[in-house]
Amino acid sequence: MGIFEALVLGIIQGLTEFLPVSSSGHLEIAKAIFGDNAVAKESMFMTVMLHGATAISTIVVFRKEITEILKGLFQFKWNEQTIFSLKIIVSMIPAAFVGVAFNDQIEALFESQILLVGMMLLVTSALLFLADKAKTTEKGVSYMHAIIIGIAQAIAILPGISRSGATISTSVILGIDRTRATRFSFLMVVPLILGKMAKDLLSSDFTTSDVSVMPVVVGFIAAFITGLLACTWMIKLVRNSKLSYFSIYCAIVGLIAIVHQLFF
Image 1: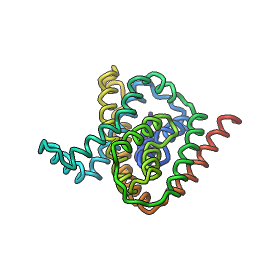
Image 2: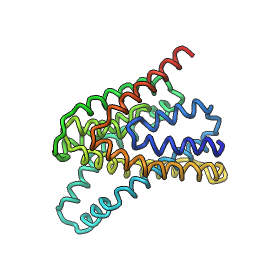
Image 3: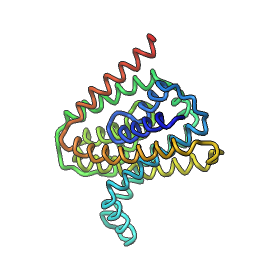
Image 4: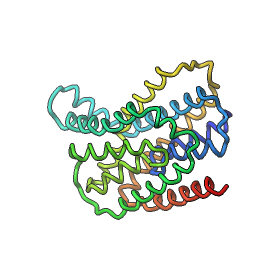
Protein backbone atom coordinates (compact mmCIF):
# COMPACT_ATOMS: atom_id res chain seq x y z
CA MET A 1 0.00 0.00 0.00
CA GLY A 2 1.43 3.36 -1.05
CA ILE A 3 1.46 6.64 0.85
CA PHE A 4 -1.21 8.22 -1.38
CA GLU A 5 -3.60 5.31 -0.87
CA ALA A 6 -2.95 5.43 2.90
CA LEU A 7 -3.66 9.18 2.95
CA VAL A 8 -6.95 8.72 1.10
CA LEU A 9 -8.02 5.82 3.32
CA GLY A 10 -7.12 7.85 6.42
CA ILE A 11 -9.21 10.80 5.28
CA ILE A 12 -12.12 8.51 4.38
CA GLN A 13 -11.95 6.78 7.77
CA GLY A 14 -11.72 10.05 9.71
CA LEU A 15 -14.66 11.62 7.91
CA THR A 16 -16.96 8.64 7.61
CA GLU A 17 -16.45 7.29 11.15
CA PHE A 18 -18.39 10.28 12.45
CA LEU A 19 -20.42 11.49 9.49
CA PRO A 20 -23.41 9.15 8.99
CA VAL A 21 -22.27 7.62 5.70
CA SER A 22 -20.61 4.34 6.80
CA SER A 23 -16.84 4.24 7.20
CA SER A 24 -16.70 0.49 6.53
CA GLY A 25 -18.73 0.84 3.34
CA HIS A 26 -16.60 3.67 2.00
CA LEU A 27 -13.37 1.88 2.88
CA GLU A 28 -14.55 -1.19 0.96
CA ILE A 29 -15.46 0.97 -2.04
CA ALA A 30 -12.09 2.77 -1.83
CA LYS A 31 -10.21 -0.54 -1.68
CA ALA A 32 -12.15 -1.77 -4.70
CA ILE A 33 -11.25 1.41 -6.62
CA PHE A 34 -7.57 1.21 -5.71
CA GLY A 35 -7.51 -2.56 -6.18
CA ASP A 36 -6.46 -3.55 -2.68
CA ASN A 37 -3.36 -5.61 -3.39
CA ALA A 38 -1.98 -5.26 0.11
CA VAL A 39 -1.23 -8.50 1.87
CA ALA A 40 -3.73 -9.44 4.57
CA LYS A 41 -1.43 -8.59 7.48
CA GLU A 42 -0.66 -5.10 6.20
CA SER A 43 -4.30 -4.42 5.37
CA MET A 44 -5.39 -5.60 8.83
CA PHE A 45 -2.77 -3.50 10.61
CA MET A 46 -3.78 -0.41 8.62
CA THR A 47 -7.46 -0.97 9.49
CA VAL A 48 -6.62 -1.30 13.19
CA MET A 49 -4.54 1.88 13.17
CA LEU A 50 -7.19 3.91 11.33
CA HIS A 51 -9.87 2.91 13.81
CA GLY A 52 -7.48 3.69 16.65
CA ALA A 53 -6.94 7.18 15.25
CA THR A 54 -10.67 7.93 15.19
CA ALA A 55 -11.10 6.53 18.70
CA ILE A 56 -8.42 8.92 19.95
CA SER A 57 -10.04 11.85 18.13
CA THR A 58 -13.32 11.01 19.92
CA ILE A 59 -11.52 11.03 23.27
CA VAL A 60 -9.99 14.44 22.45
CA VAL A 61 -13.33 16.00 21.44
CA PHE A 62 -15.16 14.62 24.49
CA ARG A 63 -12.22 14.91 26.90
CA LYS A 64 -14.19 17.03 29.40
CA GLU A 65 -17.11 14.60 29.50
CA ILE A 66 -14.80 11.60 29.79
CA THR A 67 -12.83 13.28 32.61
CA GLU A 68 -16.08 13.99 34.49
CA ILE A 69 -17.22 10.40 34.01
CA LEU A 70 -13.93 9.01 35.34
CA LYS A 71 -13.96 11.37 38.33
CA GLY A 72 -17.49 10.31 39.15
CA LEU A 73 -16.63 6.62 38.87
CA PHE A 74 -13.63 6.91 41.17
CA GLN A 75 -15.88 8.36 43.86
CA PHE A 76 -17.41 4.87 44.07
CA LYS A 77 -20.88 6.30 44.58
CA TRP A 78 -24.22 5.87 42.84
CA ASN A 79 -24.09 9.16 40.97
CA GLU A 80 -24.90 10.54 37.52
CA GLN A 81 -21.55 9.45 36.10
CA THR A 82 -22.00 5.89 37.36
CA ILE A 83 -25.49 5.66 35.86
CA PHE A 84 -24.25 7.01 32.51
CA SER A 85 -21.36 4.53 32.49
CA LEU A 86 -23.74 1.63 33.15
CA LYS A 87 -25.88 2.73 30.22
CA ILE A 88 -22.76 2.78 28.03
CA ILE A 89 -21.93 -0.77 29.17
CA VAL A 90 -25.50 -1.93 28.49
CA SER A 91 -25.37 -0.43 24.98
CA MET A 92 -22.15 -2.30 24.22
CA ILE A 93 -23.54 -5.77 24.98
CA PRO A 94 -25.35 -6.46 21.64
CA ALA A 95 -22.39 -5.43 19.44
CA ALA A 96 -19.90 -7.24 21.67
CA PHE A 97 -21.98 -10.43 21.50
CA VAL A 98 -22.37 -10.27 17.73
CA GLY A 99 -18.68 -9.47 17.26
CA VAL A 100 -17.56 -12.46 19.33
CA ALA A 101 -20.19 -15.00 18.29
CA PHE A 102 -20.15 -14.25 14.56
CA ASN A 103 -16.60 -13.03 14.01
CA ASP A 104 -15.84 -15.29 11.03
CA GLN A 105 -19.13 -14.53 9.30
CA ILE A 106 -18.58 -10.80 9.80
CA GLU A 107 -15.08 -10.92 8.33
CA ALA A 108 -16.50 -12.65 5.24
CA LEU A 109 -18.77 -9.65 4.69
CA PHE A 110 -15.72 -7.42 4.23
CA GLU A 111 -14.36 -9.21 1.18
CA SER A 112 -15.27 -6.80 -1.64
CA GLN A 113 -19.02 -7.19 -1.04
CA ILE A 114 -19.84 -4.00 -2.94
CA LEU A 115 -23.42 -5.06 -3.71
CA LEU A 116 -24.09 -5.55 0.01
CA VAL A 117 -22.47 -2.19 0.76
CA GLY A 118 -24.76 -0.48 -1.75
CA MET A 119 -27.90 -2.07 -0.31
CA MET A 120 -26.95 -1.21 3.26
CA LEU A 121 -26.19 2.39 2.28
CA LEU A 122 -29.83 2.60 1.13
CA VAL A 123 -30.87 1.37 4.58
CA THR A 124 -28.70 4.06 6.17
CA SER A 125 -30.30 6.64 3.88
CA ALA A 126 -33.78 5.62 5.02
CA LEU A 127 -32.81 5.81 8.71
CA LEU A 128 -31.33 9.28 8.31
CA PHE A 129 -34.44 10.48 6.44
CA LEU A 130 -36.73 9.26 9.22
CA ALA A 131 -34.54 10.77 11.93
CA ASP A 132 -34.44 14.14 10.20
CA LYS A 133 -38.24 14.23 10.25
CA ALA A 134 -38.49 13.26 13.93
CA LYS A 135 -39.64 15.87 16.44
CA THR A 136 -37.07 17.56 18.66
CA THR A 137 -37.40 16.69 22.35
CA GLU A 138 -35.31 16.97 25.52
CA LYS A 139 -35.63 13.34 26.58
CA GLY A 140 -32.57 11.62 28.05
CA VAL A 141 -31.22 8.09 27.48
CA SER A 142 -32.90 5.37 29.57
CA TYR A 143 -31.66 1.81 30.07
CA MET A 144 -34.21 0.54 27.54
CA HIS A 145 -33.02 3.17 25.09
CA ALA A 146 -29.44 2.02 25.67
CA ILE A 147 -30.40 -1.56 24.76
CA ILE A 148 -32.22 -0.49 21.58
CA ILE A 149 -29.38 1.82 20.54
CA GLY A 150 -26.96 -1.02 21.25
CA ILE A 151 -28.91 -3.31 18.93
CA ALA A 152 -28.71 -0.61 16.24
CA GLN A 153 -24.95 -0.50 16.76
CA ALA A 154 -24.74 -4.28 16.41
CA ILE A 155 -26.64 -4.16 13.12
CA ALA A 156 -24.27 -1.41 11.95
CA ILE A 157 -21.45 -3.96 11.93
CA LEU A 158 -22.70 -4.70 8.40
CA PRO A 159 -20.61 -2.79 5.84
CA GLY A 160 -22.65 0.06 4.43
CA ILE A 161 -24.74 0.74 7.54
CA SER A 162 -23.31 3.78 9.27
CA ARG A 163 -22.67 3.18 12.96
CA SER A 164 -23.12 6.83 13.88
CA GLY A 165 -26.02 7.11 11.47
CA ALA A 166 -27.78 4.05 12.91
CA THR A 167 -27.24 4.92 16.57
CA ILE A 168 -27.98 8.64 16.29
CA SER A 169 -31.00 8.06 14.04
CA THR A 170 -32.36 5.40 16.39
CA SER A 171 -31.85 7.72 19.36
CA VAL A 172 -33.59 10.65 17.68
CA ILE A 173 -36.48 8.46 16.48
CA LEU A 174 -36.88 7.27 20.09
CA GLY A 175 -37.30 10.91 21.07
CA ILE A 176 -33.92 11.48 22.72
CA ASP A 177 -32.52 15.01 22.69
CA ARG A 178 -30.32 15.39 19.61
CA THR A 179 -27.23 16.65 21.46
CA ARG A 180 -27.49 13.87 24.04
CA ALA A 181 -28.05 11.34 21.28
CA THR A 182 -24.86 12.41 19.49
CA ARG A 183 -22.82 12.45 22.70
CA PHE A 184 -24.03 8.98 23.70
CA SER A 185 -23.49 7.59 20.20
CA PHE A 186 -19.86 8.71 20.02
CA LEU A 187 -18.91 7.78 23.59
CA MET A 188 -20.48 4.31 23.44
CA VAL A 189 -18.22 3.21 20.60
CA VAL A 190 -14.85 4.15 22.16
CA PRO A 191 -14.59 1.10 24.48
CA LEU A 192 -15.65 -1.21 21.63
CA ILE A 193 -13.05 0.21 19.23
CA LEU A 194 -10.28 -0.04 21.81
CA GLY A 195 -11.35 -3.58 22.71
CA LYS A 196 -11.48 -4.62 19.07
CA MET A 197 -8.03 -3.11 18.50
CA ALA A 198 -6.60 -5.04 21.43
CA LYS A 199 -8.21 -8.27 20.20
CA ASP A 200 -6.90 -7.84 16.64
CA LEU A 201 -3.39 -6.95 17.78
CA LEU A 202 -3.20 -9.87 20.21
CA SER A 203 -4.81 -12.46 17.94
CA SER A 204 -2.90 -11.56 14.75
CA ASP A 205 0.60 -12.79 14.08
CA PHE A 206 1.92 -9.75 12.26
CA THR A 207 4.92 -7.79 13.48
CA THR A 208 6.17 -4.33 12.54
CA SER A 209 8.32 -5.99 9.86
CA ASP A 210 5.13 -7.12 8.10
CA VAL A 211 4.03 -3.57 7.29
CA SER A 212 5.36 -0.40 5.71
CA VAL A 213 5.66 2.13 8.52
CA MET A 214 5.28 5.40 6.57
CA PRO A 215 1.87 4.62 4.96
CA VAL A 216 0.53 3.59 8.39
CA VAL A 217 1.79 6.83 9.97
CA VAL A 218 0.32 8.95 7.16
CA GLY A 219 -3.02 7.12 7.34
CA PHE A 220 -3.14 7.44 11.14
CA ILE A 221 -2.47 11.19 11.13
CA ALA A 222 -4.98 11.79 8.32
CA ALA A 223 -7.68 9.80 10.13
CA PHE A 224 -6.99 11.58 13.43
CA ILE A 225 -7.12 15.12 12.03
CA THR A 226 -10.17 14.56 9.81
CA GLY A 227 -11.81 12.68 12.69
CA LEU A 228 -11.47 15.73 14.96
CA LEU A 229 -13.08 17.95 12.34
CA ALA A 230 -15.85 15.50 11.43
CA CYS A 231 -16.78 14.74 15.05
CA THR A 232 -17.15 18.43 15.90
CA TRP A 233 -19.05 19.10 12.68
CA MET A 234 -21.42 16.18 13.21
CA ILE A 235 -22.49 17.44 16.63
CA LYS A 236 -23.60 20.72 15.05
CA LEU A 237 -25.31 19.00 12.11
CA VAL A 238 -27.44 16.73 14.30
CA ARG A 239 -28.39 19.62 16.56
CA ASN A 240 -29.53 21.64 13.55
CA SER A 241 -31.49 18.76 11.97
CA LYS A 242 -29.49 18.49 8.76
CA LEU A 243 -29.32 14.72 8.36
CA SER A 244 -31.35 14.77 5.15
CA TYR A 245 -28.27 15.86 3.17
CA PHE A 246 -26.47 12.69 4.21
CA SER A 247 -29.59 10.66 3.47
CA ILE A 248 -29.47 11.86 -0.14
CA TYR A 249 -25.72 11.26 -0.34
CA CYS A 250 -26.00 7.67 0.96
CA ALA A 251 -28.83 6.95 -1.46
CA ILE A 252 -26.77 8.19 -4.43
CA VAL A 253 -23.59 6.31 -3.46
CA GLY A 254 -25.60 3.18 -2.65
CA LEU A 255 -27.35 3.20 -6.03
CA ILE A 256 -24.06 3.80 -7.86
CA ALA A 257 -22.46 0.86 -6.03
CA ILE A 258 -25.39 -1.42 -6.83
CA VAL A 259 -25.53 -0.42 -10.51
CA HIS A 260 -21.77 -0.77 -10.88
CA GLN A 261 -21.75 -4.22 -9.31
CA LEU A 262 -24.70 -5.52 -11.33
CA PHE A 263 -23.96 -4.08 -14.73
CA PHE A 264 -20.22 -3.41 -14.97
